[in-house]
Length: 183
Image (cartoon, rainbow, N blue to C red; front, side, top):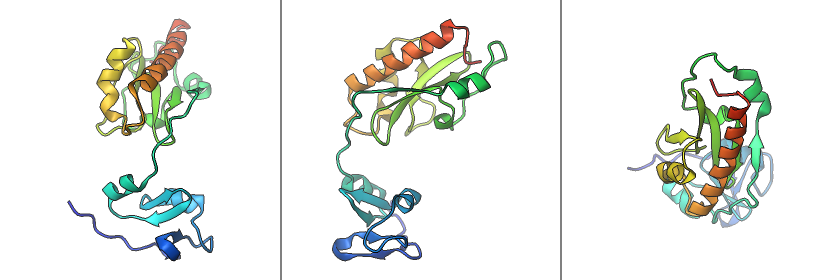
């Protein structure tokens, strides 16, 4: 499959060495512009315009795992939107906006705990196939085996995933024990 070559957006220009400059800077690309265009790839401080998705992946530097892993909790979202006994919540593909807890694994991937029917599910934030997750109450190893193909990066190891899943399971268990089932 070939990708149609996209031209540089208005105001962007190629600098020396093939790096990219945005309209806001003379010789580099600002963070806002880099985030706006998926074709912009940063490699050790230099930005490049790359139209081929496979080439973008190859050019990116190796991923670093965030250590120590940290549990992020969205208490405000959970408390404002979930009342025990109110009925089932149907999953949608926008899970990344509806998580109650998250463990960032890399700058581009995280494991999430989110409302799933009458419980809390665990899955990756970015998935290659939609809705691959399992309830938090299952064995961590079983959850990992079911979702591992969505890790998206070889730097995300089994051990790191299991540690993150266990952190999310502990938080989910605390919420469910308080009677705050995701209903």
